[in-house]
Length: 247
Image (cartoon, rainbow, N blue to C red):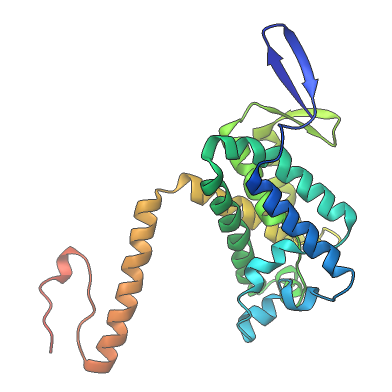
């Protein structure tokens, strides 16, 4: 619920507006998969099991886990949050960027969850063999973006207490951080929530041109190092590396 100012006073309205075509497609896909779960056990194959991603390279799970949910309340609240926060962000960004952001944060949260599960801590090791499902990683990413674009916009926590969006995100981020390290959370993959927040922040705040350039540079260095091992040549590098010679 949010408060909408107008020139004739103020009024309260539930929701940010009608569903766009992109939101209908994402929500529809989630609903279809949720209904399919009632007849076909999809969790092991399509859910995110870090152990299977690492050992068997079931990389598709990094994307498919976002469309599975553990119950009616799980999908209901996730899709409600997607509508509430996603609608206004899509108006600002456009549908193409919005859909890209949604999947980047969801998949990125999955990747960070797998990496977290490899750490030598008890909560992390417990996550290694767990089956993680739900769109919450992407939803937390949208929540972070919403707080960056509308920091003072009130969000009604539990539909009762109005809290500025920036404070709302800090509270939920702190809860996810504490729960992911302590192992609390009652089966909720809080590391995935935290991963969604982190990926969203980096995606929106980091200079993507420099970031992508750095990724390309490191990839090229890796390829050159492999060539060096094969043919005994020096690896490439920046500025001061140009005087190196090939043997």
